[in-house]
Amino acid sequence: MPKLGPDKQPQIGPDGKPVIVFGPKLLIACNTPVAEGMVVHTRSPKVQKAREGVMEFLLINHPLDCPICDQAGECRLQEYSVDYGRAESRFTEDKVHKPKKTPLGPKITLDDERCILCSRCIRFMKELAGQDCLGFVQRGSHSTLTCYPGHEPNTNYDLNIVDLCPVGALTSNDFRFQQRVWFLKETKSICPHCATGCNTVLWSREGIVYRQTPRENPSVNQCWMCDEGRLHYKFINDSRRLTLPTANGTPISWAEAVEQVAAKWRATEAQAIIGSARATTEELFLLKQLGGETAPAVVVPHLGEGDKWLLNADRTPNMAGAKLLGFGTNVARIADGIRAGAIRALMVLGEDPLEEELLARLELLVVLDILPSRATRAAHYVLPSATFAEKQGTFINAKGRIQRLNAAIAPLARPDWQILAGLLRGTGTAKYETIEDVFADMARVIPSLSGLSLSKISDQGVEVAL
Image 1 (tube, rainbow, N blue to C red):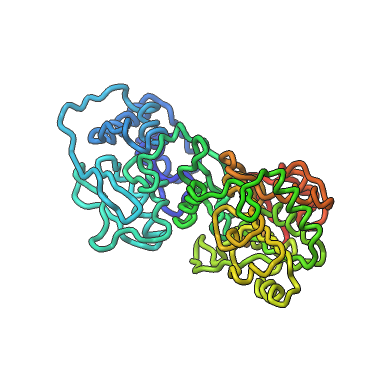
Image 2 (image 1 turned 90 degrees about the vertical axis):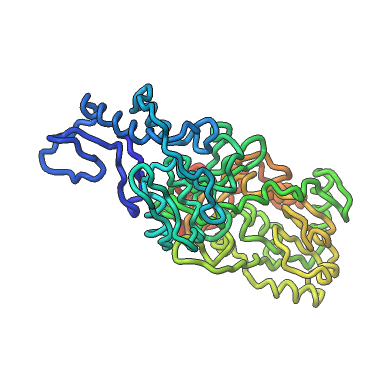
């Protein structure tokens, strides 16, 4: 049955204008309780004619913006007009004109002519985002959506109303006029912004990620995500990305880099590891092996202000995975070891916690990272990494749910697991050919992952014991 109200968001209630079923009189199905002996007809001629009428009223003043509307290709009104509406318009009068490009806070642009007055955005902001800031003014076909004077949407969840809008009335300033959605590839992924691990979809084309939107998972984020996480993808397309390995600032080939680093790492004692809880579980597992049993291994905590909904104070997606693998968080221990001369070789994955003066004391500094930093400037060897959108792997969120990442675009550099697997081969420690091999070995030695494989982790993830 067609409906322009929420699909699976019961918190914000029904709005089922075109959902009409046949009974003693026509009823709106989504707001009619089921009763004993009820018989429902959804495709009778009377119902179909009523739906055509409702669609005709919705389209009477709706602009013919489809060729230029950002919602084209994922617009419910467009789809239902084809499936349930009339083939032609009988309306000959002038359409009612309304404001076309109204800022609705810093992140959203409103086109009032496209609004069908469903009130989903109003209810979301009031009931879920906690800011009662939107409402309708005027009457009838002159009604418009607006915000209360001086109270524009200004929460960390504003962009969810762009997802909720069934038409193109609300558009994201970040994605507005960037791409047609039918040109974009959808890839299921996980937000790397915090320890909640919201399920997402990455939308990409020709090696560029254009947007990130929430993906439904009732156990994690339902179908929402915070704006900080949603917009936390820009670094993927950053022009400063590291792409070539270097030795003391001089570009070298990947084969030379892996061979030289493996040989020097094997020959140097007093080693230590600084990892990142933004790395995948598989990458941290391989990194820990490079340090062996004796090298101290830590990850760097990143804390911020959380909220009572989705944003976690832990701003890393895989701290639970790092701790499960035996990583500590005492970075000061590494710094003290370098000062005392007890640490002479350091491998850093995706972090920049130490001053350059301290790093300069090391005999060997190997850095795997995405962007330039103090650590990459001081490093003897820099091995460029792939972003979360360019690799496979898993994160374990704060509640102990292991979830899969998928590669949306081809990497500009190399996924860290491939780099680390190459170094382990070079040191003679272990041999891995695929990410599945890495996970299988990890599941063999980590009791919480026993019996799991990458293919057994569904799109909704799997709970594991922490």
